Amino acid sequence: MKSIGIKVVSQFIPIGHKVKAMDSYRIALISHLDATGQSLRAVCEQAGVSYEQMKKVKQNKSKSTNVDDAVRIANHFGKSLDEFLKSESAAKNAEILALLGQ
Image (cartoon, rainbow, N blue to C red):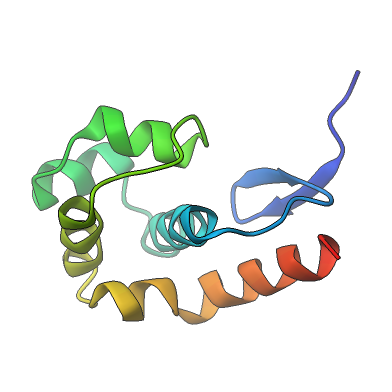
C-alpha cells in the first residue's frame, strides 16, 4: 500500500498528521539542510552533536533530542533555537501541516 502524504522539503508527512514541538524541530532541521545544501553528517560534525541521534530525528524515528544538541544545531546555522524554529521556510511547512491536520 502506498503512503499518502504531502512533500515537505525533502520528506513526506502523512496527511492528518498533527504538528508537535519535535515535529517543528524536525521540519526546521530539514528546511535548513535543504536551504543550505549541507549534509546532516557535516552539520553534526561541525556542531559537535551525534550524527546517529540527528539522523533518527530527521527520519522521524526519534521523538526527542536534548536541548544542548538542538541549540548547537541552531547555532551552526547562525541562529538561536527560537530563530531556528521560526525560520520562514520551516514556519511555512509547519503551517501547511497544521492546516492539513485539521
